[in-house]
Image 1 (cartoon, rainbow, N blue to C red):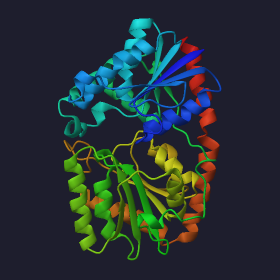
Image 2: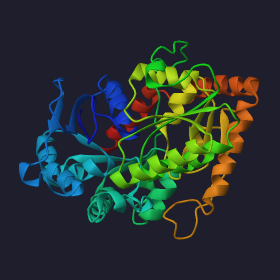
Image 3: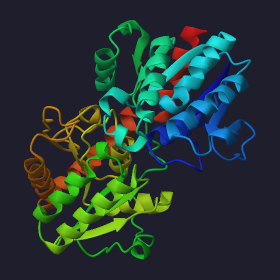
Image 4: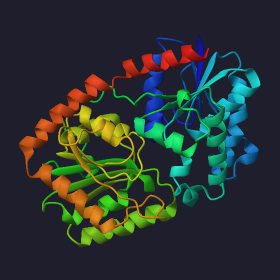
Length: 393
């Protein structure tokens, strides 16, 4: 069986969870099918990977229109595939075109949903209407839709009621517990300005509103004094958001927060070291269909404090592998908390619970490592995806 996997991101250019998913899933699928990968950007060295550039005529166009411009080339290149498997709206429309053009079965993995990310209009402008169109068209036309969590399945049915429940399968994101494991080395942290002589809370995320990073900044002054908050943030959606983040970071630092900001993506080893060294991993997302980074922290033996939204409660077991923070969105808030200050304080309270009880934290970290290994292996996830391919051919 030939399967063409379509994704905007693919190594070495990976900036989010969907790119990690495409990378890890493809490694396992290559053992099961004749896999070809199509991605955006510059040529890749692997013979089974084809990269597609933005057409020259669209070089200065809206980013959403650029993505749509790449879709026809991706669809044409998928000729001969038995299944096309697309990831995120950037590539979903290419999968839909391949289905129409070649009669190929289209499997779509939903990593997030545009109707639930209204802040994307801040980044894409009118392109948000285009991305929403691409997603809706592809979701409703796909042969099967894979939801990365049970919560995502519920969101799909709510946002796209025309989509029959029998066309949706739930297959969680996964984790490579050989790659993500507890390590004792901290040599790569010190050059980043991270001190290894004090209690540390870590957060690693793209700088986008859905990750709730501004709320974690506001929680920083309420952390136990002497706690170092390390925030690794990269790929800001907009210059305005980056400026807002910097302004709040300066404000909370003046209030006494011990804050370290790393703005470049971490190397894999530096990420392992940070997740292993931190006493708590913080995930303040206001929208999170699954959250691979929580699995990465758990696999490194670190307890997680996270917002109880989306698929996070399916990963982080409250009171066992970490603590969940209740979340209530305000009406007409675009997904932001009804009371931002109360949310920040509640988040800090739960982080402080674990900082104040290292023995409990270590126990949760060990439980998280076991849960990641037992429930979320990529080999198991690839086998489930392979069965879905077989069902549509």
